Length: 358
View 1 (spheres, rainbow, N blue to C red):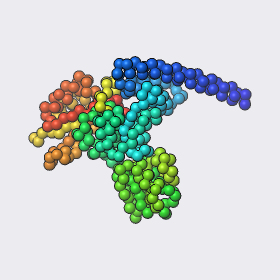
View 2 (cartoon, rainbow, N blue to C red):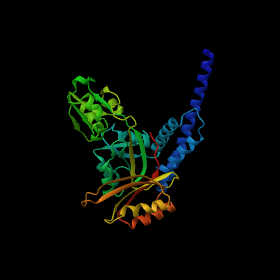
View 3 (spheres, rainbow, N blue to C red):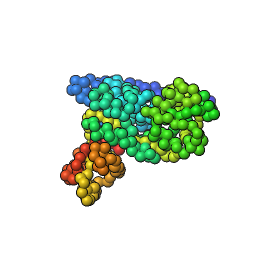
View 4 (cartoon, rainbow, N blue to C red):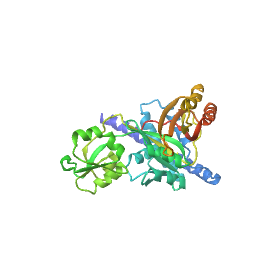
């Protein structure tokens, strides 16, 4: 039995050795591509090419190695390969260990250069000014709805969506001691606190909750302040050396947050795209009907529609809509041209590959 085990392990070692050789051979080719891109002044990062590689490999995979793990493995290979050409600079809500940071790492891989900034506006500003090539911002939570401030920023900055990440979110109560009886106050981002409202009311009803700009900032404060706890991620516990008071305190276990990846340059068609738009309607009967009608006639599926006050004029509303298809698809392009005539304001926020749950 021991001899049989050794033979199998020897086989694994030989496969690993060959895998390593192939990885380095791949890296040499990547460096050659980098030289061509540098000479032709082309973009180093191509989300369409990356998406094409991941789709091709997962469709070819016959197992038993799982596709979810395959995506993670090749995302890291692609990230490390890209860093040989030129490391990507990605802005996200800081400090490090926020869920936005985690979403950025899931999308770009751990070899990307993450630039933590103070708020959502600063993410947009970093990308707009060229300090970062890409930014990652939260747009909605499955339980708490849309992040209104992100929508506001799309009105103020001329940037485009090139990707999305659907991240399963689990909140934990963390502190320096891990002792629930020592907690005198809790720090949290308001969205995270809202997602844990029932647990907090049942288990710590007399403890005040203070708002912070992010869950990671909450963890950072809890690591410095006696009697303080934070609602934050497992990654934050590791980074700020905190103990778990309680795991998974979110009220609903199917808790997902959707993040958008923003850039100055648009994304090309992949064949499995969605498009996001914002618009405001004219003040007349049936205004919204006339805007939605062209999508119905073109048989374009609207996967999301959300409204919010424009903040520019009383009782004027901005609508945020996701639809299936790329803005350069003929039927989508024609529908949007018809819609424009019924809008006071219309902005195409971008077309991008439909995201997968991470």
